[in-house]
Image (cartoon, helix red, strand yellow):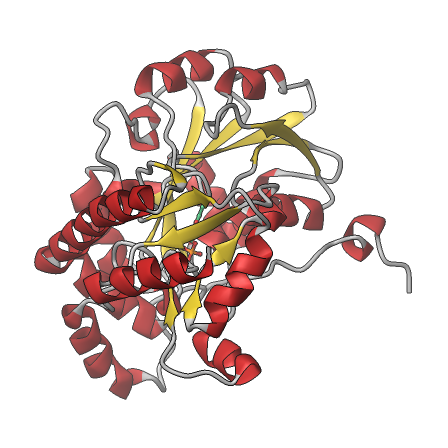
Amino acid sequence: MKIPDYIADLKRYKPGKPIEELEREYGISGSIKLASNENPIGPSPKALDAIMSALKNLHRYPDGSNYHLTKRLAEKLKVSVNRIVLGNGSNEIIELLIRTFLREGDEVVIPEPSFLLYEIMVQAGGERPVKVALKERVLDLKGMAGGVSPRTRMIFVNNPNNPTGTIVSRDDFEEFLQQIPPEVIVVVDEAYIEFVRDSTCPTGLDYLDADKTVVTLRTFSKAYGLAGLRIGYGVMKESLADLMHRVRQPFNTNLLAQAGALAALDDDAFLEKTISTVHKGLDFLYREVEKLGLRYFPTQTNFFLIDLERDAKSVFEKMLRRGVIVRPMTAYGYPNYIRINVGLPEENQRLVEVLREVI
Ligand SMILES: *Cc1c(COP(=O)(O)O)cnc(C)c1O
């Protein structure tokens, strides 16, 4: 069998391990996970109710056109239904964008460090990632525009950026956009946009009608608390959405995900509670981490980086033994940093206590 080099060289994406697996490995129990940027308050109760009532229809295929969810999203976002493509998580939209619009050898500009999946998906398609280092933990949009060549077909802008939690400003984004040829697809991944407090943060949705090709990605996995359900979407020009609908699997979002997402979308109380829990938690954690004498980087998301000034992997191990799961940033090129996401108040408290013990 002849396997392409770019497939043979692929590295598996390493997600934060599920709690049960870690507890088994380390022989611990009652641990807390602050490693995958999940919603600390759980799923929306309205989504749970909707999923419960949808269960009895599981012998049926889902609605392949996703009629109700697409319609409600279109109303909320004030865009035409023909501009929305739903997927099995926004991760599937990333994959679909690459499969629909790119071919082997095309170049894709990717910030580094950023979401590791961009590079994996690009490599899996046989395209070439062109990585542009962040500047002071912020996307270097000038550098990224400079990385565009005649072979560039796509650029990823993660705003806010995972794992640094930083945003690019509207002014900087517009200046960047002006330099990008209209046929290059600018993918703005807004997985954490609901948590942003900085009013200078742009959204890709404002550039749908520009003479540029901007695709905005959103997800139900974070602020809407439905990471396990797997549903997200892209908003783009109709001509692009039409092609993606032809390429995608007809039932790429499942019956329960459609029902849960639709209910979560109108659960305003849940969304507000999530956002206020995250903001209060952040303000608490900033204060406490500062008291520990550690440097941290303020964020526009539900997670942030802490500089431990020592090997983060060994601190991560020690915290794990005490039942607190965080994410070491070694794979992202920050060997001394950990990334933590905001938990419930008692989880935040425990994180601080354990951090104090191990440093
Ligand atoms: C969590 C996250 C997503 C969400 O992916 P889903 O497939 O929708 O769960 C997308 N992009 C980034 C940068 C993320 O951190």
